Length: 325
Image 1 (cartoon, helix red, strand yellow):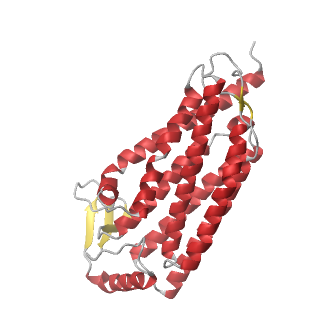
Image 2 (cartoon, one colour):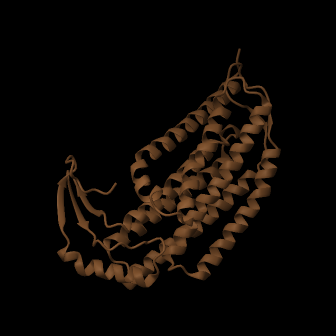
Image 3 (spheres, rainbow, N blue to C red):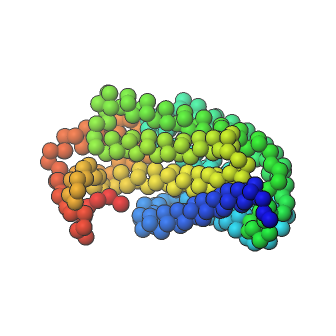
């Protein structure tokens, strides 16, 4: 007869498997949903550092996320295959997360008017974080040991030993993202207080930036809490999902920045079936690289033209709706 402890372990591992499948489905769904916009704004653009960061951040999860599915769903997988699969997936996840954090760094550098001091400060912190995580990940992957699953026929790998040092990786990631959130909120507050970012466009950019960063922070903090207080079977409950969400949100940040500078319509009010939207002037502003004076001039120009801008009322069900994608 199977003991209660074995059943509980099997149930917990099944929950982890389900979350892995959800993460993969979310990754594929987001890529399909944004493919048209991505082709227009990224693939057709000239090659820049931002474009390279986007493509790496966007498509690197297709390395580690499927490997995690193999790790958790393959029946009869050998301990050696478990070690190789998990090691490759872990290193891919670590470098992918580092790229996503680099995107957040570039975004923060941009809203601070491309300040050299901010770039050096955040760049040094990022390098220190990456440098500290290399030995952490190495020690963690070398500590992994695998055995037979608690019940026969249970798919996937069953870890019997692993170092808790991985906690340090997620803890330092959480601290880095707390800093990014604080810096973004501070700069947004100063801009609005000084009247340099009162346009609806700037408001949306800062608002979305803060909300996105808080979402990323919540994922990272969730991993820290699980590592500290949850049963060992939940070690990987949120790591793949966190990895995918980091990629998705960082790519959406870059898409929103490029969308903001190409003269599309920005939604300002949605009530029931009616949407009020303002059209921006046709002048294109690259918010990912523009300095503070350019942003200020753009915002003041938008404010002067606001009364004369067209206000479009459209039904959400109408094919001609001007809602931004």
